[in-house]
Every structure is written in C-alpha cells, then in structure tokens.
Image (tube, rainbow, N blue to C red; front, top):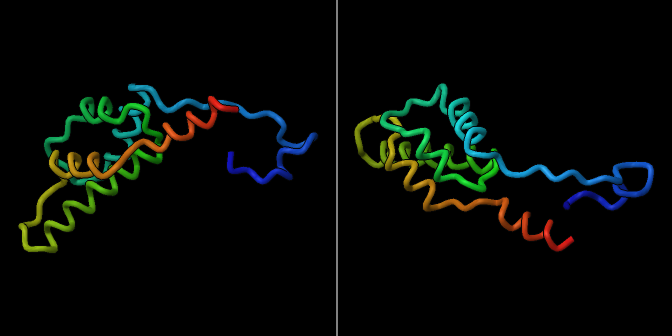
Length: 110
C-alpha cells in the first residue's frame, strides 16, 4: 500500500498480490531458522509459533530481537550471563503486536 503512485500507473506494476501472514508451519520454520545460532535454553518453538499467529516474518524477527535485548539488559544490570529463556520471549510477546492486522484491515477496505 505504501508504493509510490507512479509505480502503479498502467504498464508498470498494475496488479497487487495478496500474501497472507505465515501459517503455523511457516512460523515454526522461521523460528527454527532465526533461532539456529541464538544461545537459548528451554524455548518451546511450537508454543512460540502458536503464540505468533497473524505475525509476519519481520514481526517474528522483531520478537527474537526483543528477547535478546531482554537477556542482555538483565546481564548488563548485574544478573549472571545466561542464555535466552522463556521469560525473555514472554517479555518480547508482551511488548509486541502483529503488524499484519492493521494491514489486513486496510486490504479488506480496498
């Protein structure tokens, strides 16, 4: 939707294609790939995939970043060094929301 109108003129990009948010299996796969090199312990990827329904791949990436930041914050404020854990993801999910819901509302109104 945030495409310059010049790009939508006839003869250019005249067709818009709907790409839905990733389904459960795709979210699980995104999490597995993004978490591959992250020092984490006790993370239930299946539960996290279910908790991120309607989240985009970028939203999921943002949640992982917030979880990392949560662990780093704890370490910098005096906690012992530790891997990223479930509480970090709980925090990240509380601080985040799906960006696709607003986009889907806009798409329905077109």
